[in-house]
Length: 339
Ligand code: PHE
Image (cartoon, rainbow, N blue to C red):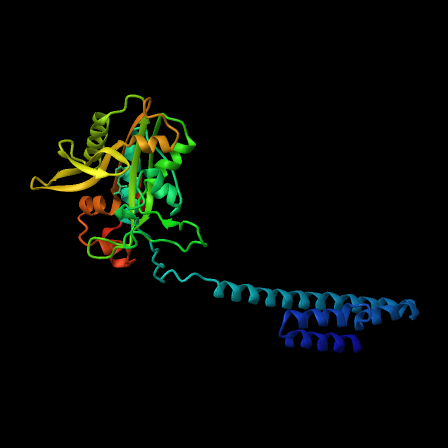
């Protein structure tokens, strides 16, 4: 019978499909608007009631069989697709994990944090200034006269200046931040400044770029005893030694009077110079419109590399700036320990 043959042919075709798309194409070929079975169903109307009955029944059976075959074939291909995805997307748990590289805190950052932490608890707040300074803030306002050796070419990095203009400099110390703060803010003042400083110097104990931390207190009745007490407190906390001995030697800075160099008694064996300080020179206060008859101040400044080398036993200054990862891994600090 014609319908049986047609059904068998379509079943063979379904069996021969190789993709979901093939299956869909066959479904359209059979049951689509112009599909073979659809066309046959359309002929029913022109048949006698007898013929319609047998042909109709046969067509219904064929329809059922073919739909079932098409659905089964579709499910077969869908399963295949899912299994393929599952196979492709499995995680190979035998792979070793990628190592997570963790950075270290540079010893200089660590020491700056520690110093800021101690001075912050003592009531100091942070003040900032630019690395490129003008002559006024770096020298003149700090009572450094034009002929002072600190201004000479071999010490200071001068920037190119326009005709007749005074050249800017890379700040040679953090002291210009004192001036910026005193001009901007009214006493009482209790500030620290820290950051990069520059001098044209390069040997085993000097690098052209280095770091300083500086403190300034201006108030009524401020005196040398406050300066000594403040520095003693600071160094005892910083070096974690409540009995650390300090020695104040007379010194000279144009911007402080009197001035002193401070040594610490290191490991029960020798005095080591760590800092310069003094009472703010009346000229400096005047340059910032502060009346020295009413206000006095003290200031101190030190090299951060120096105290970092002492505290953490770092031998060579130049290695601080080599960016050698082996050095950093050895001397650096885990981020967790950063407070
Ligand atoms: N600015 C000085 C230096 O660079 C240090 C200093 C700061 C001295 C403040 C006295 C007061 O050596």
